[in-house]
Image (cartoon, rainbow, N blue to C red; front, side, top):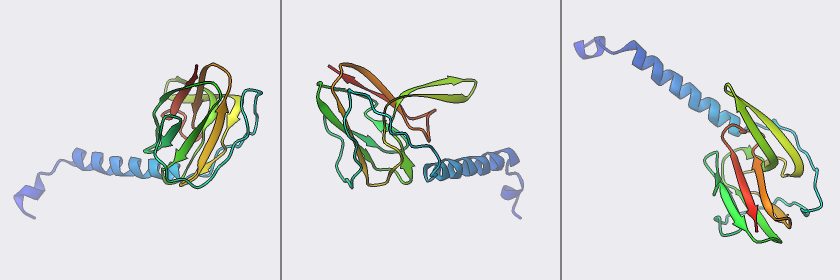
Length: 153
């Protein structure tokens, strides 16, 4: 072994290994099929659909990419149908409600207005918004990091 290799920092090597394992766990979670499906709907929403998609987000669309909703804040007129395009590997959800975080724990509070169920790669989910106000939503699989809102004017 050359002198250069004898002096490698074991902490640095451990950090690289832990980072690699952590990344593998995050990617595995994206492919998870856990999570529940709820079909609760309120009077201010209409039927949902999932369909193949290759579209980019526009004024009434949200992309799900890199474990995030893009954009995280969308403003639309009452009566607009918003479409979420699932571009990540694995599955995500679009679930109405809020998330609270305390001490590293994310607790979901779905409100039953809409829930896409699991959306696979290349599929989409539509929701019509008739009631003015701010409608918050999250991903049941990644609630700590995936939260967003639609404001209806």
